[in-house]
Image (cartoon, rainbow, N blue to C red; front, side, top):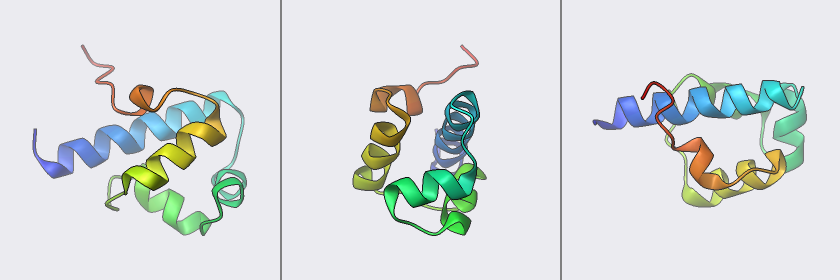
Length: 74
């Protein structure tokens, strides 16, 4: 798997989990103290994301970080 595929997978998983929690990008961004455009870039796979930020997102969504890395197509 290349970086682009990994970033796309993580972004999609974040979007899915965020919508399950009925949060907007702006609400999630506020919860982890980043700009909502940053969340948008992450969700579209256009932004590299640190483990620290990924962990903050997982905590804000109240899920295990591994759920954001899963390949849900398999």
